[in-house]
Image (tube, rainbow, N blue to C red):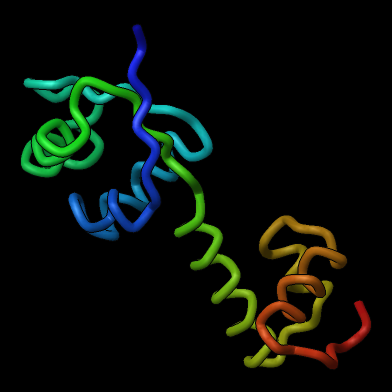
Length: 119
């Protein structure tokens, strides 16, 4: 029987730190990652280092962990807001982040930019 552990991104970050979490999100974001119970997988060691991979095995070993992409999304959205504050247009931001102008506008509105330049 396959065991799946449900946890939030904060739990993973608490165990391995933000930098390693971002690395995992880049490689495994929006998917499940099987964590070996005793000895961490070579690929996990290669990505985040032996110490952090072992911490994941200790904390989550023997099951699957869902790796979200929330941290990457938070960082991207912050960079979009910074770009707007620096004077970039919605169209420039859409091109830079490979998103539609509608998505850029939505992200900016969620971050408190009620008024925004037209694309």
